[in-house]
Length: 182
Image (cartoon, rainbow, N blue to C red; front, side):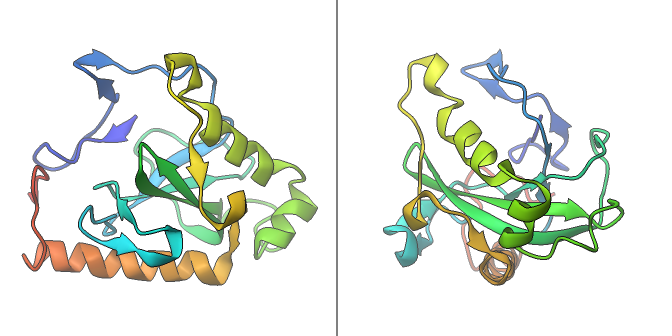
């Protein structure tokens, strides 16, 4: 499921590729969503990630808590880490979060705590996003920062920066291209 950014009011619906419904070969084991009011600007080059440009979508969220979310559910979350995924040459941030209501939320504050209380989860998330397109005959995705997750402080920086890019979009300082701004 994805936010249909090119449709009015950006509905959540099943993703398509080449006009066909898109199915992923491996089940994702976490809650997947996005931060509203963020935008990975395709004209913004991130020097820290080899000059990669944004993927023209909101920032993706991977929630690692114990409960499965309902499609379209709004959750209060706590950012913990981030991966700089390079997917088809575009920068596609994955912010790792935990629901504020999760029983372990008070224990987990950064990427080190994720490893302590959810051992192997960061590696599993990275590996899933690295490999998910391989069954379609595409190469493995790459990551910035030597394939490692960056910490909470950097994740918060990404959220602030992409929120500013979204504000630029909404005030027409950036081109909307194919995006619907309704």
